[in-house]
Amino acid sequence: MAPSLDLASLPDADVVALAQEGRELAYRELVRRYERPVFSLVYRMVRDRETAEDLAQDTFVKVLNNVERYRPEFKFSSWLFKIANNVAIDYLRKRQLDTISTDGSRHATTASEVEATSFDVVEPGQNALEQLTSQELGTAIERAVGRLRPMYRSCILLRHVEGRSYEEIAQTLDLPLGTVKTYIHRARHELRKELADARE
Image (cartoon, rainbow, N blue to C red; front, side, top):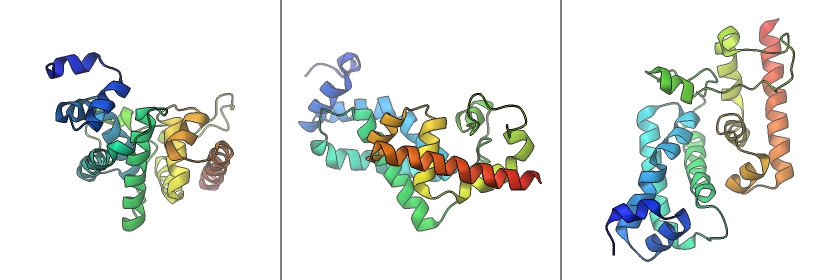
């Protein structure tokens, strides 16, 4: 087989096919490509760096153990992020950990980390009176998002942090498109209600 340098020029589907053949270099290439995105997604869910590192590692172990089940008609990244999301949700359910913040993680130590863990729940087009910034209500926003059920939280993160379309979220979470839209609508409603109460 050619040196691993050649793998960098291959599309995901080809690299995954090699990984399915048991090629260790191909698996390492997939880890290289997606290690940071997976960590970022999990980190936003659990809000703790060490835990996120462990869960990201768990994600790739699951990928290695189940790579033969991957179906090439789907995007590899969607399949991978679905595994990562499920790993994070399982952890949150077991630990009952509700520490997500919309103004960046309390564990973030650099500006880039804070930026990477921030998102805005405000819809484009809302007027200034309706906009609630994390600077104004950081603590209230953190509590409100933390109270969201895990699947609502996942949808909100994928929509507002990852910038994914409803269709991509549905594929990643293996949910019907209508369910994704409903979850996001309900999550926004819950957030706005709690934030409105906090302003009174």
